[in-house]
Image (cartoon, rainbow, N blue to C red; front, top):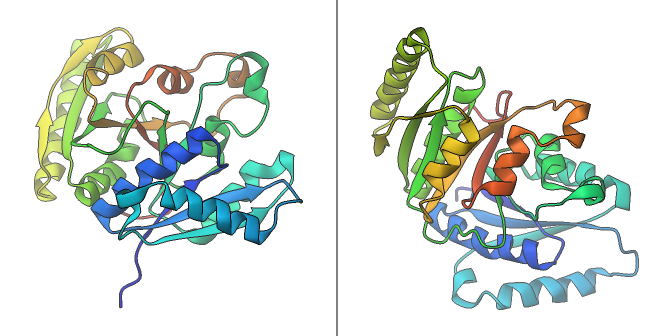
Length: 274
């Protein structure tokens, strides 16, 4: 019997992570994945029996959505300051296709307290599906793929094509002309045509829609926020500058302002050769 691939879900049992667990079930059913719940336990008073009960209640609360989905869980003991590191280590051991993480936007000093979504993304080498409470994965039809001349823009290509194949989605290729020169336009047409050839080779269902402007994030959000059945594929830099903790970066703008879930790949090779 073939072993199922896994979908890891980070859970702290608060509303946000319960929502991400709920939404992960729809992805698991689409791609026949096993859902693995990961919780880093920093409360020494909690026993294994306590977690058995909490998790079973959480599963039962999903009703029909959980029926037919293989669900397991890992409870990992840890200290308050090492939650993200323990989480990343456990994800490595599980070796999932994707990691689902729910998040809330933190402001002010809260950005430095506890495991933020950006810390998890930077510590985890696997593709992260990040979503806020009002975002859903239930009715996905489209993966939005912004393509710019940035050196990292195409590093999400193989993972994005696989995700579309796994989930039965349309690949919406969006070449973004951001302050392009005539030479830039020629270069971008070449890389767009090359990507279209790859999509055709993979027999992917796709569309191409060019957009232009002066601000990549604003143009992308203006396009994708019109749709509530999409997920946006983006690349985050692997090694953010220390000063990024004190300023609003491109990545943080995306996390704050998107109305769609994000499929996030870091700017290095994936552990999978998709």
